[in-house]
Length: 198
Image (cartoon, rainbow, N blue to C red):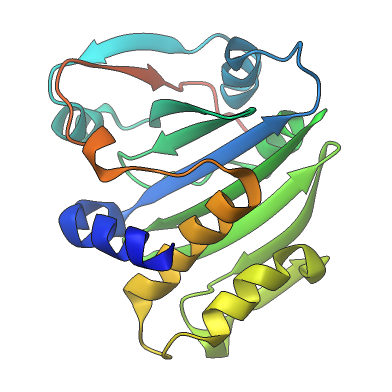
């Protein structure tokens, strides 16, 4: 599965500059994608828009722009404009009656993977790209599979480490990302505009 994401990042190299990938598994079947988007936008309905050229237009927005993907019993949200990391208070709200997995990075680094559930962030691994700078928070047993993937990669295999984050989340949730989903025009996107501090 890591090789799938290696290939994706080879074809879509712009993603290595910054993104935020969140997968939410609602534990209550009454929770809809609209509920999740409301939570993601800090308790307000986000703007829905069609962008002719999403990659180019999203960069100009200056706020998080998302593609939304439906998977088996889960939803994936890809912020692809700047690598805006979802704030902790938003993740905590998103994880009420749900399990949440997130990986994010931006052009200056910030490589993070985390797991949240029951309204709290349960585990986080910061700066996972550089073994000597990793910062662990919470119950790392939740991320044991990711640690194992990192251990099998060469120290300077940065693309492999980014790929491992996506592969681990897909293995944990059943929701992955396909490269051809990113080569779209006239695509529906979600624009978040209410990420004020808690």
